[in-house]
Length: 340
Image 1 (cartoon, rainbow, N blue to C red):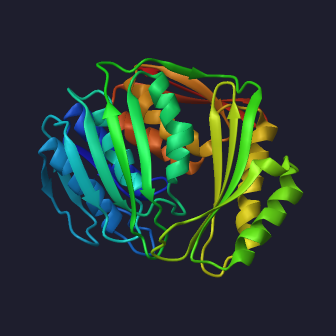
Image 2: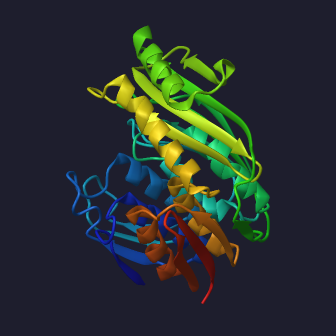
């Protein structure tokens, strides 16, 4: 049984999700100790427990220690069973992170699966639905599987209540992915997503976006949530290029000025454009597991975050693979995955 220190590196829930994902893929059991021990609210939260439950259900796994606030978990999985599943976080915790946990095993499972996931869909510190649908999944499709995402209702903190469907058509083996060039920009769009908020919030964010980006008027838009369950706001910037689509998001939070929300998204976009690489910081983190499971691949990106390097360390505990980080220029890194 693999023993993992859950507080190492970045020390968040990603270590747990990666361990669950690769336990499902490889069948290797693990014991995790000190789960999120250095966080303000240490141990397992609802979104982590939902990820554990999803992995347990799909892998008919034996689990010890799944409780709110638990610092220790043991997980031993059987073969993954494709099928139709529904998982609800029960709070505004991220439903997209639950998908992140079980998706790697479904990409090469014996048959197709359909998931209905409920909870937060546009949360700080989690990949928003639009990022997964427009940036990450097209690259997964390039590796062979088909993953279709359909947003039924967005969910924000603190009300939650978001829901989306994921339909996964697997393949026997993932194809290698190499992303070294971004290519020419083919399209771009800025969207302000608002739910139960005054109209001036979107207008203030649009003002900042126009000042910072200077895009064409038709490249901006406002999307007001129909039948909203609670207040929420996100600014999403999408740039489609020849080889990849990048999505950058600023999240509205209580007490955070609308102008700051918009600038957080534009700052991230500008940093990516300046580096001239195809893969942004958050996409790099998402691509590590598929890259290794494909048996190899590489991409150029910005400086890897602590989140990404911690994820790489966790992956290498389960898979006999090597993940290399090489700096090519001041703002450019190359990440390469392959067998040891």
